[in-house]
Length: 217
Image (tube, rainbow, N blue to C red; front, side, top):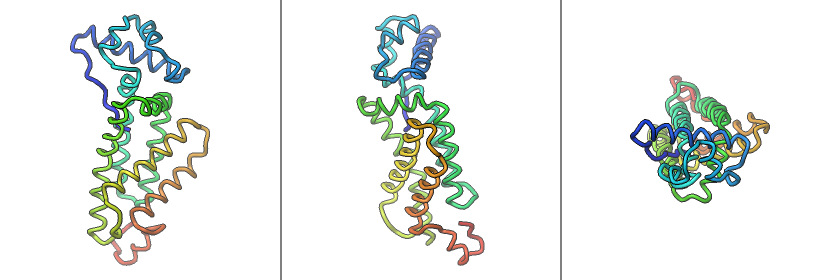
């Protein structure tokens, strides 16, 4: 969930044409599924040629990935909140995922398009997977630190587990961008519970607080 787009053209005119294409795509995605949008639709709306489109993007999927860069930033902020916040772990996960859901739903039409592109466009899928690996790195470091300190039990490989935890978040996001009216709280609460159990091996790590008055989770 961390797409990175191709660099913009260096000339101001090129920048304007690229931005016009992205604006046209964003506008069409609000009412039309990605599969039902043609390159011609975008070039007509942007007032440029078909060849100009392919100068900037190799496909509609590549263009969508550029529009979703903001989600990468929100996902990074969410990860930082989980591994570095001051509240109890469950509360951090709940707050981080709630905020991420809110931000992603603000651009849900783009996220849905990227989910479609990921299934058909190798470059988009590779960017998505690379983004997950990047997000997983600090979570894996957190897992190792908790295990070394004796708060979390040894278990699955930390990197693999961290990526699996991100998959949980992605499943919540996917559900809600397709069904925005679905109840959020049960989904987020369940996801947070899965994080707690996966990291600490029990429903609530607060039971360890009695062993260390300075421990808050």
